[in-house]
Each structure stands twice: as C-alpha cells, then as structure tokens.
Image (cartoon, rainbow, N blue to C red; front, side, top):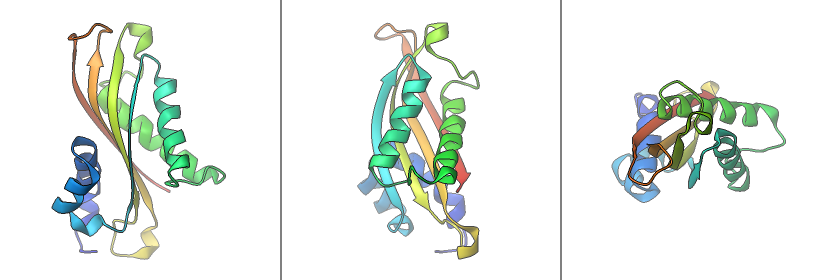
Length: 147
C-alpha cells in the first residue's frame, strides 16, 4: 500500500457505487485485495435500507454477524452514509420521501501499518424524493468507520 491509500478509501468505495467493481479497480488497482460488495435497495422505510445492507454484508462475508464490533462498525458506516443521502434528516417515509439506491461496501486496511486495523466504508448513490416517478433527484452518501 502506498502512503496515501487511506485518502483514496472513500473515493474507491464511491467509484464502486457509481460504476462497478471492475471499473473502480481499473482506476485504483491498489484496492484489489479488499473485500468488495454491491447491491441495490429501494424503500420508504430506512429500517429496510439498513437491514438490506446489513444482510448483504453478512451473506457476502464482508462482516461476521456473530462479532458485535463488525456489525456495530457497519451500522455506523451505514448511518453516516444515509446522513449524506437524506441531508442530515434520517427519515424518508415519515415525511413522504422514498429512496432508490445502489450501494457499495468495502472492507480492508487502507493504511501502511497493519496496526491501524481494518475499516469499513459504505456508499449510497441513487435517488431520493417524493414517491412519484420523476419527482426525485440524485443523492450520494459516504460513511467510513473502523472495526
């Protein structure tokens, strides 16, 4: 890993959400050893968004669901990313908004020292708005947390 990789961890996670794993790795190949997962979720209920990402991370072996600190780290990365999507107001259905999002989850150690441990990043990209087709706009959110 080069000295500035940690500065590209969020950029890489965002590129995966915006494009795909292969394209992101073509641009930032230093992340090829990291665990990467993508998915899609749409809902008027943020609990469903959160649980969809958590379920995908567990099924995709990004986290071990039996280890609390891994689930806890993912939860906080998801919440931070959702803050970006919802502009700081963590609600959608209650205020007549819906989301349609692609997401990426990336896990690894972006630092030179192994002592820094592993980190998780979650990025959402998609739409948020009134639950009427064509009444939504793009949104992007990124969350990074240590394990």
